Length: 369
Image (cartoon, rainbow, N blue to C red; front, side, top):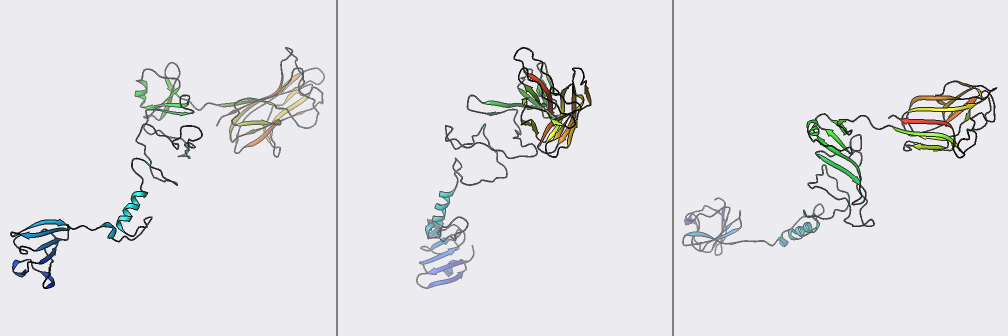
């Protein structure tokens, strides 16, 4: 114990004193120090001692010190310097302000954007909505910005993960993935054709082909088919020799996600494509078809040379075939040039079946990448 101060209510305030009994003569002394007072070395019966370290107040009686009370200070009387979002000027008000503004661990509402380095959800599932129970009150949903290069949502440790969209009870299961070692996949014994199996030790995807689990190949090819389809008995059109003329393309089927058809022109998304087309000519002598850019008219793919006798009825095709990579969304058309003009030069109708459509130019486009 050091730095003992004595306050005598008869002699006034004294400076630091050495804690010995012979220096303390008044029984009305108030002593202040840090630490528990020593029974034998400090004070006399009737003295009061304040331990500044704990705020315990001691009194001495029978030669021994004992705790009499603990001094307390009202927090509202302690000054607080406002800072940050806390505007209160005393400690009690500052505590009350923090209590009203904090987010309870059991739940609450955060307004504005919340940015965290890592968000972990320690639950089997979680909802992204505003707690509504119908279409009008539910939240807008769950948006995932691109992560890495594929924009995917990753199941880091899931062994049996499903991604579904739609109303409760009638969801569309987009994919089911089983993750584990290849040995664990083989050991399952029974598999599902709707499940994709991912071998974590090989980083390889497998699928069930009905007999066994086989390595999954590349992605499914996308194919669209464009053609000139006319009503029963309608011929393909007249030809005029000497220049390329646009061929009709008015019907599309197959995959339409990467290719659109409008006014006989077709537009492709960026990608790599394989083209195969047949373009007929009747009584046209030498003839050739090709695919050109709508803007600028440059050639994309030139078809093979062909010949259709213009003195005796005959119809042949100029075939278009090739693979091309397109860097941006681009519009194209099929054009055809003949040597001989003829009213039935772009093809003659077969008139089969009474109602069967007549088909002339055909173009199949396969998206490779």
